[in-house]
Amino acid sequence: MVPLFIVDLTRGTGHFNLGQGIVGTTIGIGASVSTTYAGYLSDHFGSPIAFLALTGVAMVGFIAISTLMPETRPAHHSAIALS
Image 1 (cartoon, one colour):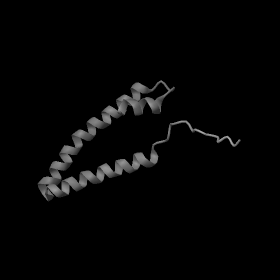
Image 2 (cartoon, helix red, strand yellow; image 1 turned 30 degrees about the vertical axis):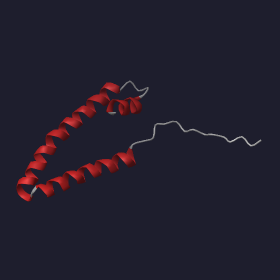
Image 3 (cartoon, one colour; image 1 turned 90 degrees about the vertical axis):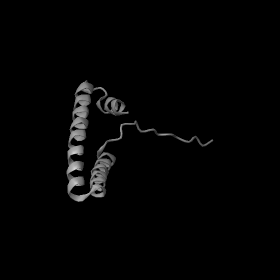
Image 4 (tube, rainbow, N blue to C red; image 1 turned 180 degrees about the vertical axis):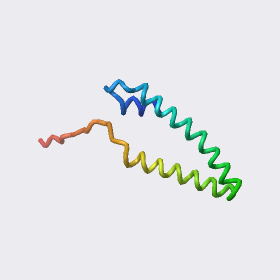
């Protein structure tokens, strides 16, 4: 799904590869940092706190995407014919 989102957002700009690189880099950084972060929290505060913290990070990401990502689907105006 990620490449489809990138294609949709970069359509007509010629920046698909740049978008793919940015998303791939971000995913790699997130995967690296999350294990370190969760391990630290688990060692110092316990596993439930680590899971809650990672859930909080995921919720922040979900809310950001839900509110900030533009709708790219063209507006569809359907007219009802009254005869």
